[in-house]
Image 1: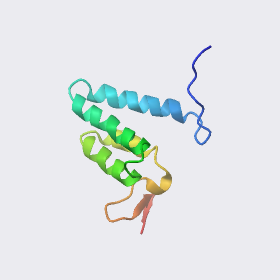
Image 2: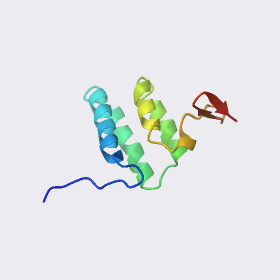
Image 3: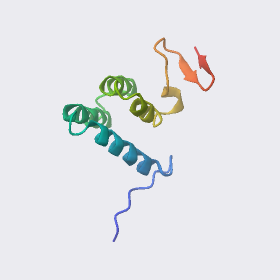
Image 4: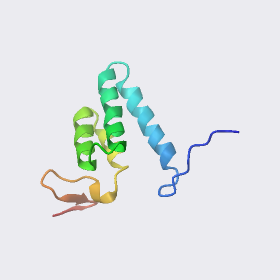
Length: 100
């Protein structure tokens, strides 16, 4: 019996995409920045355990990956549209403009 990852009904192919993202983060951070990678994993563990909000996760990821803007962008692509690309002033950036 082969072990297939569970199908994500909300986002088909999302599991494979998420795993590819995690592997890219791992490749970039290890072994030189092992502590950062462990903190990265802890952020998600805390979210899964209900210990942090989406906003807290976004803030922590932006700090941890501050030198890797494309990884931050990759992370944000997994967020619901309403949580993506919020500007620091509390407005939400949409393709081509900003909404207050």
